[in-house]
Length: 165
Image (cartoon, rainbow, N blue to C red; front, side, top):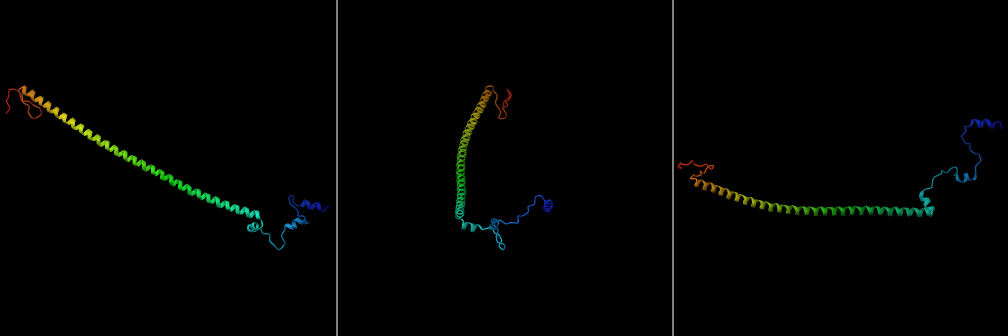
């Protein structure tokens, strides 16, 4: 017993010494000595397990369905955006037509206003000409009554007592 104590002291505290006796469970799990342990492939597992094959098929069907739905939603969204853009373009065209009509109407009103103002200016010019002629006639009459004649330049009068010419 004294020989076991120095071996325990020499070994580190955390090391595990293997049990030399083998259990029957370890023999069942361990592969034979010449064959390497390989993980079974998914195809073999599916072939052996019916539930796994059904779930795999269901998963594949769901992925296909959701992929189709995503593509359909994407196409629908693109068409919806095109419809909205067409609608906005139609509204812009309608507004452009309205603006063109308003510009035409404003041009007509400006032409009408221009014609009216031109007529009013012509009327004022005619009245001013008549007033100027009337004032000139009044000056001429006053000058004739005072025995003065108006000279054609700048409204100057001849001095009294001198005859023209």
